[in-house]
Structures are given as structure tokens and as C-alpha cells.
Length: 85
Image 1: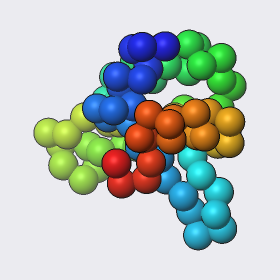
Image 2: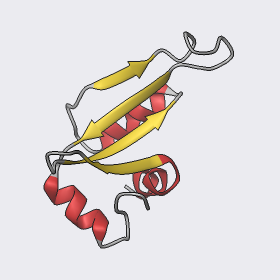
Image 3: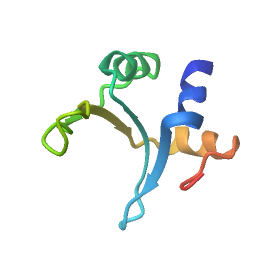
Image 4: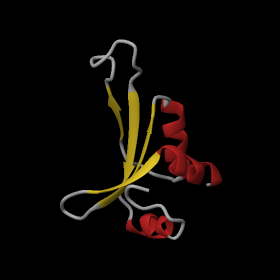
């Protein structure tokens, strides 16, 4: 879990959409990292892929995992992890 918390502080994010739903998100060009985080959190949320090569042939594709879990987000708020941290 310390690994996941460190990843949240470095490359993770919290997003609240216009309807008020909040999500914890992870983005990386390394699919294995995103899969590892999903396993650690025991999540079955979908990992999406963004084709970045279509924008620039030198860029790598990136992978995103978004988790909408009120309990997790409330706990992370105690660590100072909020939207636009």
C-alpha cells in the first residue's frame, strides 16, 4: 500500500466531475504498473488505453485506471490528497 500511496502523490490524481462524483486516478505509460496497482487495491475497474502515438509518433501510449470509491477518497483526504493537490 505504501507503493500505491507514493504513486498517488507522484503521478496519481483525484477528479470530481460536474455531477459531483469523485474518482481516484492513476496514469502511466507502463501497463504493468497500472495492473499492479489494480491488483493491490483489489479492483476490477477497467484499465483504459490512450493512443498517444496518433498525436505524436515519439510518444508512448498511456494507461489509466479510475476508481470511484467514496471510502478510499475520504481516507486519502486525511493525507492531503484532494483534487488539484
